[in-house]
Image (cartoon, rainbow, N blue to C red; front, side, top):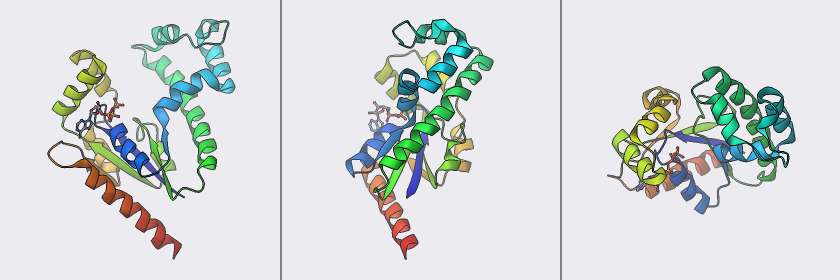
Length: 201
Ligand code: ATP
């Protein structure tokens, strides 16, 4: 089965692109959503977080104490790296389980904001980078999340630049609102299906 990784900077439109693939019937693994979910549900990960960040990390009922964790990792790269070193392998485990469920699909997509940064792209056959002008990304995310311009710039700085990611990506999808996005997605879908059919022969 062909595994496609889709990524892009904050607000570039990667989730929007994935929603269109979803309409085509392609299963999508939303890595960032899964990462948040498994901090509540994966017993191995919960145990590791408790050991690393203390008893306060979860309430007596087992609910994640996000405020406690945020206070530790906020502006502390060492602690953030420690948390990522626990969460990323757990996301890979969840992805492997999820793959087994979707073995009948022609291809699947893994959407991850840090596909290149976490080296997750090395586990995909092909990668797609969604690129949008910075001004559009800023406008869209401020409208969507209601965050400040400064907070958004900080988040953007924690990711590789588009120039760095463009060197690693197999396909680049420009989402600049001057061209229709859906036909480009349909074209990519056809390319993936052709690749699969060529490999079958
Ligand atoms: P994040 O990294 O924050 O999750 P993202 O890359 O997944 O962001 P989206 O959530 O897909 O980005 O898009 C950000 C916002 O911009 C959304 O509100 C979405 O509806 C809007 N958007 C994306 N692409 C377009 C487009 N071509 N035309 C109009 N709105 C768009």
